[in-house]
Image (cartoon, rainbow, N blue to C red; front, side):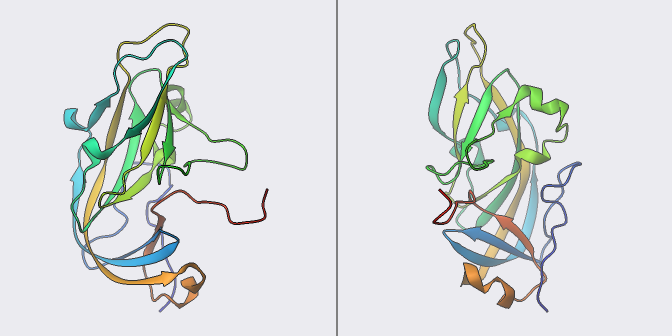
Length: 195
């Protein structure tokens, strides 16, 4: 059987696990498709330990190149599915890997911001994935004309224990046996010729 399903990714509503034990996840990372079998799933609660505070930021200034290793640290055979919500008036620009912007179109990289809650109350548009030590990096901007003393964001999601079954070239998607949930484990980087 070939094909994929996406039970929760990018859909409005509360965060749901992509797959359960003995189901498969297909993850795009390192310009390959990796097929994993899920051996366990655990919720990562949106509590105090999942809040990152980047500290004081001057008016209009940006704190750059901040790793999300803490609090999103994973084990060697683990994949994380996360959402985020700013708790203060900041703009978060996400990079994954470090040099590739997430949430982009041809000439604009969108940010995750506090006013975004109006259009995205469940934070489904902020969903991203991390595998082992491949954490996203963020830039934090203070858009206000006054300095702020705290610049916090809350993270939550699911942690999957996985075992790798196989990996495939990008063009081999039609030959990968399903069913599986397919996700982007890193930013979608444009190929040549688009200018």
